[in-house]
Length: 295
Image (cartoon, rainbow, N blue to C red):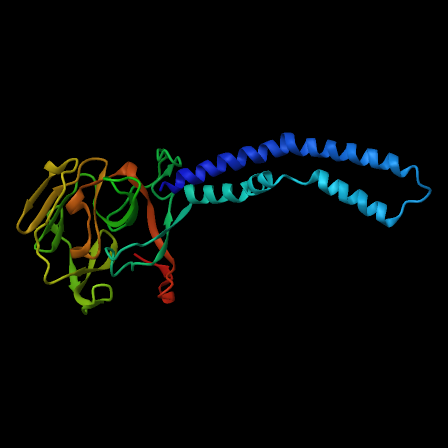
């Protein structure tokens, strides 16, 4: 479901109703109310005194004449709210919910996060065309993007390789442009979803330090890699994969390295597919203490 398109359609429909209300319907109702009250006032002239009941009737007639029809009330009146949500979601921040454990231990399934929409440039809603450039993603950024194989689905992963980088993931060790990425062992991590322990390490990619997980029993080689654009840039072996990132693309991985479908399997993320940089957990119904920034 393309929520951006649905929201844009609602903005158009309610906006047209709001405009029609301001330019056409409100004036018509006011003229009709003026006509009705004029006729009623002429009838009141026949009486020697005006009672409270007559004034109440006059007020009721005015209110009924000015009353919006239900379809206009539920469209035009919601336009400002829908427009505000649309602008905030399109150009400032957008909420997402983490659906899986591929970013453990950084993000848990069920985390509600906020995504910065202007960090990587302003894009037109629905069309996703960049109109104002800003900074480019950096190694270590956690990004939301439209899945290259089905752009109706949003994915979240960590940027590992930038355009032109050579990324090697061999023997469950990461190297970028021939330089091994340092990692330090931490205490084992208990994965509640899989009911088992994983090896946990602290790793620094670019200027971002975060934790990653490795499952001891999982193989180093990549099983079931797809046929994707620029696949010839990747060399697969029994130890893993080495990829040269093409221009205008990024190599991304999940922090839960052995339980993440990422660039190792389905290829590179085009710049045009970027949605924004994830930066804040604003809710997790099962873990309220998780609220806050993450790296």
